[in-house]
Picture 1 (tube, one colour):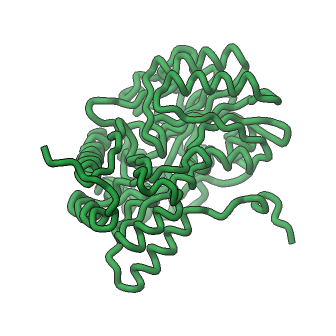
Picture 2 (cartoon, rainbow, N blue to C red):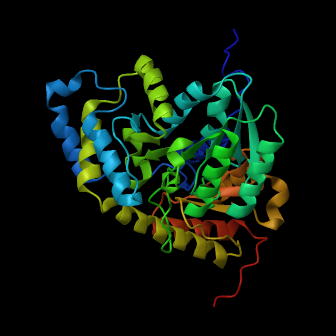
Length: 397
């Protein structure tokens, strides 16, 4: 039997490393997991307490609303007002989604179909490439540069020379996996481009509150006129350490929000209402929590990047996200990212993500996730120092 939408899906590269990790742990090895970006920080106690309280009420056990209960959408609008200075109408410009991946995937169903094209950066978070493919559209990749200006130029050229002309451009900054960050001026240029060329911008702002060294990631909706041509995804996964809760939002252009609302009314009744209630309370009352989470990730970033430098593995510390994107050291480059990461998990007992898993543009790199504490990260550095014998560690300052 042929399974239409998954027949041509390639093997999920990350499962190779995951299987090696599982095998190592079954053999008694202490595998330090810096691979899968699964936040280890606990959800705020307020969220847990409110969930338990709301779950005690039988009225909350019934079907909820596919677009999110009104108070949750109001809370999200309040967050955007405080964080970005962006006013959102919770009735027409905000919808709750069951995680950002669900929101993006279903959005593509209403935006693209066979014969359409969508522009996506490479490398990229896998669902950014596969959501348009699931909708039957063609994906045209934009090589991701090390700076925003070069990326914008590549984006404009790729659109100009593509046929059919792409009708959607997927963006995500701070960027997973590379950590590339942009400013509001970049989004203003992107909005102008979209207006001039009748393109919709879809921005996945998953790391809206994860910025380092004073950098505060902007929202695309801060750009003047953005609501005419853009929608943005915001997730509570990282900022509020609520990964398993699956609470996200799409905000922006009211016509796009209405289209997604119509589709979702056929597909689901929203997430469990006590989850929505807990998320509402956290958004309204625990406004300092994202800042505390950010401090933890910055400390881990510093520990990892300093440690890699000490063993001779040069990396550029990212300004945002919960990841470090590291070019494979030259002495090991010919191995390729899958073989190199396999060696790390088997010999150094450190799990990482192969760059090729994020698309062809990711080959030659490794992604570290900041999901272990500083003590474990330092142990990972010691393990890798013992294995990567061809690196030349610099002298200590």
